[in-house]
Amino acid sequence: MERIADFFRWLNDARGINFSIFYDALDRARFLEGLWTTIELSLICTGLSLVIGVVGAWLQGSGLGVVRKAVQAYIQFFRNTPPLVQLFFFYFAVGNELPHVLDAHGMLVPPIGNIGWAILSLSLFAGAFNIEIFRSGIEAVPRAMVEAAESLGYSRLGVYWHVLLPLSFRISLPALNNNLVNLVKTTTLAYAIAVPELLYAAAQIWSEVLNVREMMNVLLVTYVALVAVLVAIMGRWERALRIPGYSP
Amino acid sequence: MSELPVLLAPRPLLSGGRDPASGLFNGTVLASVLVALGISITIGAARAQAGVVGAPGVATLLVKWAPLILEGFLFNLLVSVLSMLAGTILGVWLGLTRVSQTAMLRRAASVVIQFFRNAPWLVLLFYCMFLLPFSIALPFATVPLPDVAKAVIGLSLPVMANVAEIVRGGVQSIPLEQWESGEALAFSRRQILWMVILPQCLRRMIPPWMNLYAILTMSTTLISVVGIQDSMTLARAALVAEGRTDLFIPMYLMLLSWFFVYCYPIARWTAVLERRFRVRI
Image (cartoon, rainbow over all chains, first blue to last red; front, side):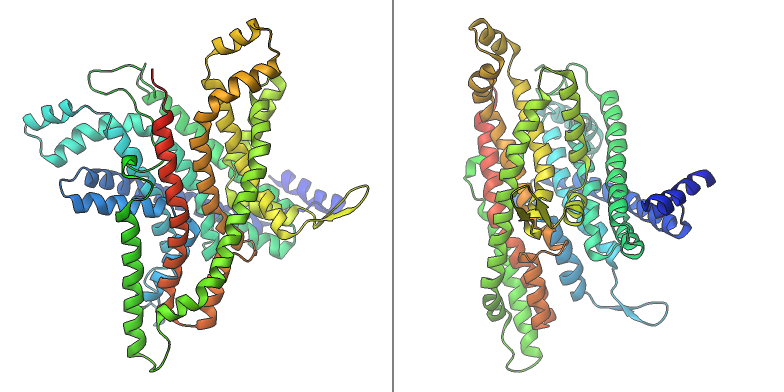
């Protein structure tokens, strides 16, 4: 560990190539914290967007036309508008309308902070795609399966939870993985509302240490590696759950 | 294509809406956006009346700023067209390299595609904005590289990788027999590619390409984060200039609805084309 730090210290002194995150404890801590925030943000948004997808796909099979139309409007609105403007809409516009509350220090603060809005906005964005993905999987389950389950006394929710969802999940998985990878890439937008994720942490470092070139390369490689790891894990899972002889 | 007892034959995921038969524009969705805009304006107006007497209404302010923000919006569209153009040209070339006969070239192209597909758009944009020089010295002249050009380059990189992937998928979807019969007719490889294979897969490549364009158009707002004046920057500047908190929601909704009105028909059209071009086996 010490030798790596010495090498990068030497690289800075001798060549002027300054990878401060490898020898400076403060910069390294900030960078790792940013990386962790990005991972946390991705995990929480993935979870919430999956919940939105499952609930939304269920509502889309509702008997009420109004509910189906509302879900459809939600999907189309969030799919066809820029996620960055959505984020700003939530953080600046909606956040501004909410009544402020007193915090522990007796200060008036907004009830939801920037991280909260980032989670909410990104989850709603990814969730809109998940609903469509789950629905297309559900459509592959024959009507007779639903009828068989109904005749066994399952309720509508029971049919969905015990029959439709498990069957369709394996079909939906490839598209779902694509969307989740996209979600991880979209977490960089949280930079715009000062959420201390990886891009924000890197920007802080390069504006203080003035090593834009080095940090930029580190940042790019880190993100590509992060996404590559995710793709590899998901690819394995996909292959494990693949239905043999069944592919679109 | 097989049918299992418990599952129907798979159907590809459409990138558009549920029912493309209902035309390019879904009335419900547009209506709900307009209703939301209307409600927010009404609420804003009510609150404005409760506040300072004689202050202009929210609708008046929106109309006042709309032309300026529309100019920014058109600039977004211009950036999207330029990036798409550059990305498509580079992407077609990269995609054809990906299916080249030389294993080395294939592998190199594959690495490039994976890299630019995995990198977040915003990071690539930052990368180009900060690390490209502000002018390029050529032997005969020095070409200045303004911020906008850098942004277009930054946006066209991920577009390039995605277009390459579309081209690869299209070319590989054509059965091998087509290549073989081309060879039997004494076409060269280049001739087979351009005169036999590409015309056939063009139809299949257009829907995902349009989908990509819609994604790119929505991503052009990212240039406001790296300091280029676009519709987003102008909308925020207008909000600061007016200093009216009741204007926030209507202003952002207006901008969102513009993007929606532009991108939604593209999505519908893509879905229609996808359905029409679907391979029938």
